[in-house]
Length: 272
Image (cartoon, rainbow, N blue to C red):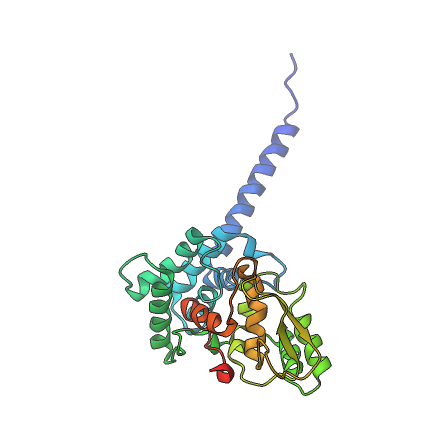
């Protein structure tokens, strides 16, 4: 009677040993704070990375817990930026999980209206960092425009009506797919008071959903925006999906209320 060769069993044992070793090594690496920190910082950014973390809500919730626990200036800034750019109405359960670590840290009494929770979180972080919130209670003004989009915004503010109109018409196309990405990249520019040299006019009739059209002509008469910030607000309007149902007879009046509810930077004062 012959016994089966031991070679297959030895190979299997070697594979198991190597597998356990690799898992153990990965776990040891993951326990290192620097490694977890790199993953957490990458996960809270909505775009621009090799890995699409914005499609991994569970990982992003973990990242807010990890970064809030650290309570360093950079980690608190990363978390508060995410909370001020995410759309709380798109997925309220996800938004509630995102803000919970900072809500608990700030001592907010409990879940409730998003604006109240976010306002408390913003004030708490501002106190920790020695900064101030804006007139709407927001913090996006703390974050500079992402360099990739600063050139287009500067062109929008230039004196060449055709170039400025073209920069506005194609702004963010294919690069800022969501309102979160838009606010993350250029949120602070919503308060940009520089005048624009082109016209944005309403094309829809009164009582109909708002439709606008940019034109490379001087912004005389009845226009929807006179500053860079207001022109970008019209861009954000479409991301929110409001144009499909809202009439907004006075866009700037609507925007003022919307910005207060979402704690976005107050619009420039050209229409006030």
